Image (cartoon, rainbow, N blue to C red; front, top):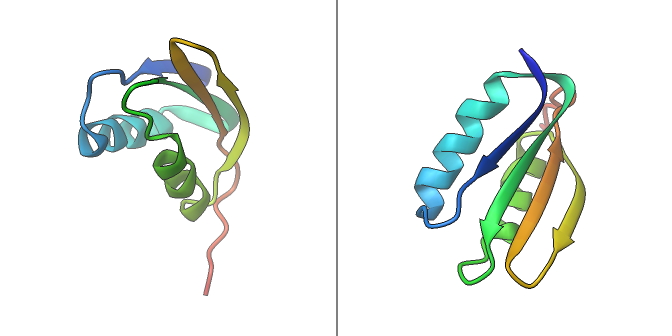
Length: 82
């Protein structure tokens, strides 16, 4: 299992990107970070941030530059909402 992983989802559909992010999160240890590189033209940062929050993960940082967006999500203990 890894503590830090980067995936580049530029050019992927939202559903394919979400599937890839979910798979990679299974490989990351608790308190590890997944960096997701997102295409600036098809910015799905908000949708992925909401997905992470619903899963109980924390968006630790978003870096926005002219060519891409880098989204950092920290894996922590899942919080079950009732």
